[in-house]
Length: 124
Image 1 (tube, rainbow, N blue to C red):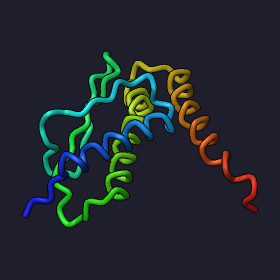
Image 2 (spheres, rainbow, N blue to C red):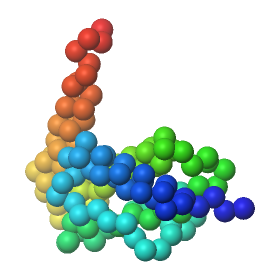
Image 3 (cartoon, rainbow, N blue to C red):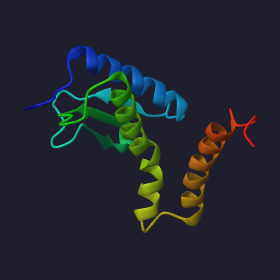
């Protein structure tokens, strides 16, 4: 039996997408909801890199219970695909320079460094 998100679930997912877009500093991407469902996955994302457009789709959650937490984690998963897109693109492009690869690597490192240390001052 299909376990498809409702319109209310889709709205919660869209809110999580916006949250993670901000947290991961992905403001240079236009992230939009697709009109067709994801096939064989809880969610998916497709890219039009020249337009800096990422289109996400929700699909069948299968045995996974649809909750605000599962929607948020799934949105994070899809946004991490966007977060890593540029690094993967330059890593597989034979014409990309070492400087291009290093720039994308540092973009990720700088964002993660900020996220992982902002609340860790009390951790020993």
